[in-house]
Image 1: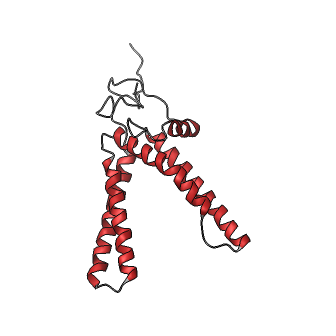
Image 2: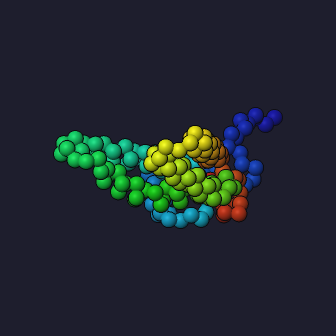
Image 3: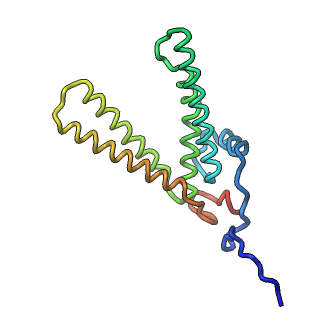
Length: 176
């Protein structure tokens, strides 16, 4: 009689061996090496570690800016935050695109979100500069609703598991 074996919770249907989750350092290193690489795929751990790094860097930058502004009674020019944003925006867009690729989706979803965001900003300036009709406010709220909906859809896509095996964007970084 053969012993009963526990089922492998990481079975992958013959699509290769499951690689362990990336560490924080590994994920950041990959993102920096692929600073402007919008091709290929990124695992969830790579993406979410990069998001954590970006949140920490942004928070520290805001703290430095706030401290500087308080100490020197400076205007609210957040130069450190602007520099951090400029440094992180390209790799953030790249890893988000690769993450969408890993779930079998196009990076154009990010472009759609950006376009709706720009429309929202433009409408906000139009409303702030004049006294428009109530229709402008309804249009603005509709655009904000679309922005929120697109953000939630992207969040859903980003938490999905990798497609096993190869897809149109390349081999799976999770399964080899």
